[in-house]
Amino acid sequence: MLFTDRTDAGRHLAEALRHLKAEDPIVLGLPRGGVPVAFQVARALGAPLDVIVVRKLGVPYHRELGFGAIGEGGVRVISDDIVRRGRVSRQDVATVEHTEEAELARQARRFRGDRLRLPLNGRTAIVVDDGIATGATAAAACEVVRAQGAARVVLAVPVAPPDAVDWLRTKADEVVCLSTPAGFSAVGEWYRDFSQTPDEDVIALLEEAGADPPPRRSAPATEAAVEVDAGGLPLAGDLVLPADAGAVVMFAHGSGSSRHSPRNRMVAAALNRAGLGTLLFDLLMPVEEADRANVFDIGTLAQRLADATDWLRGQVSVPIGYFGASTGAAAALRAAASPNSRVGAVVSRGGRPDLAGRGLGDVRAPTLLIVGGDDTLVLDLNREAQAQLRCENKLEIVPGATHLFEEPGALDEVAGLARDWFTRHLVAQAE
Image (cartoon, rainbow, N blue to C red; front, side, top):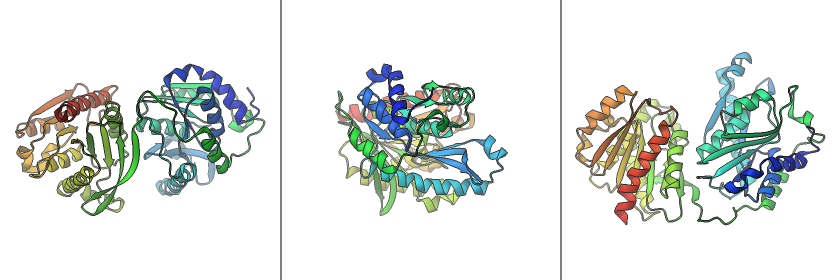
């Protein structure tokens, strides 16, 4: 199939996506070239339009050849095969990533200005591009929107090579592609007009589509990037508050992770859908993360969590809970054990409560420990810690799950357990 231009491709693609109109989707265009296509899709479906910003990582001596991509929310997709065959050094990878991270931030500011991303929590997200070559960028986009809370991810493109489409079906819940020619060499060969799309055109289309989503049956959540004041230390965070949120859960991430953790964001999205607010924030400044000793300094991390809790109490007037992962669970329990703590509930995912020290017996908040059944060492540590707890507590074992809960359905079970615990001990107690 040969398309006249991106507008023509968008109209054809919209027809193939009509079945999604009843799902009240959000359409996300990959800038720049994907936005004119996405504009036509959004118009036909009566859906809101936004951009999903990702950047291809190109081999230094052959920029058109991508060895991976990065996206909003800290998502990183790397093709080890291309890195190996292209002889891309570790230093080259780091240099290209650093450059593209700066461009990603510039594009996000350029296209959105002061407008926040449209909240994706619980929604169907349709990711649209003008075509696919390697699929790395599209894969990163799918991972980004899933991490941002989309309940269902649909990837829609006019043209792509068959092998890329097959691979991308493992990254999205549904892939809609109008043409998969066997003799594929470049996206542009399937368009009569494949001229570049300027930034100004992207901004104009977003403005024409309308920055705000259409009215829905219930008010959407508010989502904002915030600067958390942790005892005078500014820490970057993401705060999501559903309408009439009954409580807010603060996330304490584990070692080597950050507020961009896709696992924590997946759990946060489930809590948001249940009407719970969430605050994911970095416990360390970027310069501190370089020293691995800092990520195991439980005392400092717990104090920052406690200070951040004081800041959050100035922003909301609802009960607050902690969700801690790995070493972050130790910090959450240490903070909850403080004499001045008023935290309402704690959930630990694959946590290391043994690192919390001797204060476990001082935790007063109802505490849920979730551990994978195949994470035997951590399971033993949690059983020992549970014996020291004097508050209401429970140990939940997810059968067959390992430390990161990467097995199919494992993280969904974690999210459900956390949702029910917080709903019972935070929301119900406040009513």
